[in-house]
Image 1 (tube, one colour):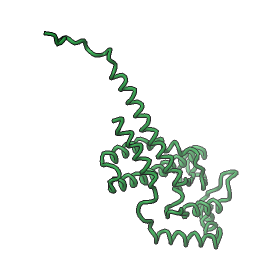
Image 2: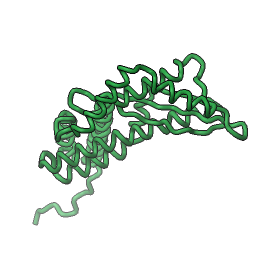
Image 3: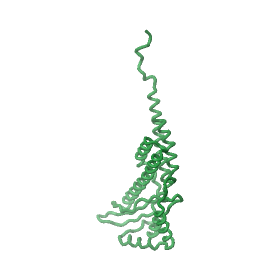
Image 4: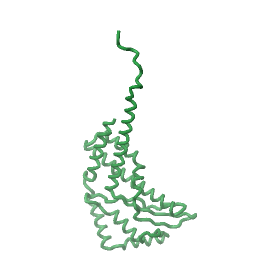
Length: 235
């Protein structure tokens, strides 16, 4: 088991190193996104201003100290459209749905957590596809793929915790019924950083299990616990 997990660590490193190198990006989708991004740059803010007006009609406001609503919307759109040099989304976006709470701070915390859960789910989905692809290409065995997926599932909440420093690109609030507050939060997290953080988390979990198995093995090999031989073998 220890040896198996050691090779899993190596396989995991190879797996994540190959991120973005397998398969071809959707060329049409990327072309559409590039066109939209170009249009936004040529007509800065116009569509974002329209969207901000819609939000304001619904009673939404910016939090004190945050950029103007239209600027937040524009920035979130730009980040959602950006693709990296490999043809994949530069950022994983999460959130955007209104969340209701008893106060602005409570609703904001809940909305932020929901956005992080979504991003963590997207990270897990991307990693699971990498594992499946590597297993399909015979780079890792079926058993190794299964174990990696188990580690991935076990690391889900820890991946969310690793997103603690993610900064919102959009956060708005409005007063709701029954003295409640609705908050909209949208987060953006670098895809490459997210994949790297997940890799390190899974590697650490594997390393911890290896060390734990090593300690248990030391206990198992305690010769003082061997029962006394009743048969000396001398006739």
